[in-house]
Length: 479
Image (cartoon, rainbow, N blue to C red):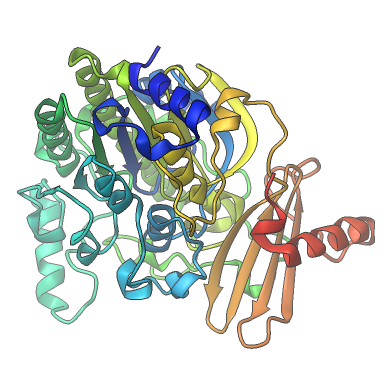
């Protein structure tokens, strides 16, 4: 049983004074972030995926089958998770740096640092560089980032450099091919360098309570990974999305034109994705997941080798989902299930069940309060999530009524409720809050969400109930 967790829990129960726990007795936290990772993993039931090391972590903890981000875009999702605020706080959803929106935000790394932890960031944790200026004892810089290009093949680098020369004022730099798979060692790409830095920090930090945040950048575009990870998948067996059309009856606000992907070399500037390109993109996405999975495997091995596994809480999360041709779309940037549904795994020795899946609705704003309770730290008053510790102990228990996500479209904000059975989205005018469009998807009859049922008489009572729950907001959805 974890030495530090048992001490913290006992003291909390006996004295209800979590701040009295000495820093040296607190469990460590390994905080693993993965960019653009949807729940395409073996532990989430995808038998085509090669993710043995994340699956190994899942066997040590609780897998949340219904976990949701607050907004399906990197910056806002991460800022919300790390600050404990939902995206409407300070209009985080506008996607500037967190501390621009909320200057006095007491983010999770600040809270842990001020409670005696060594806080270290490696790779992508926050989206904006300015958000690393406070709350970290150390921010590890990764060398060899190729000025944002991230290509190793001669062709990829040539195309990326040519793009920059031809588009000197473009906001997006180094737009080369959407994928590559050269025969190179893992540490030639940036995620391999992030892993090596993380291993060095684990060795350095042993003996002191740490909050080590490791942020891997794949499977974010471009889908670049060493050849051996592409070779794990047979391209002839890759299936295309079975629902390549937008949901029937969905309002105009629901869709995205997936401009993020169209900007890459060789991608269609308009219209649909050709089948051969779609298969290649899916192949690249899977190769990148397996590449990151291998890095996580080495990280878990080192944790064990250093004798830290039983004294460390591990949380793994992907910042939002991703579409791979479903609904005729790619990337994120919507309120659809595929964009907001995320992987979330907690391993907390001595507290959490092991190798168990939970159907409880969980949100990314729940991570901060959960880590506070697991480590015996006082919960800051501003947090807008709920600690998941009761679910870690009893994974099948009744929990939240709904998880809430949102996404803006101009002067309209879409708020989306995910209940056990339904996804209800209400597009509201941001000036007066009036609904201008609605979506309703029933996972019992239509698990792929291919038809908007909001206008169907059969669902009138369900719609009314969900509208009432939407009005109650996140506080009305708490367990």
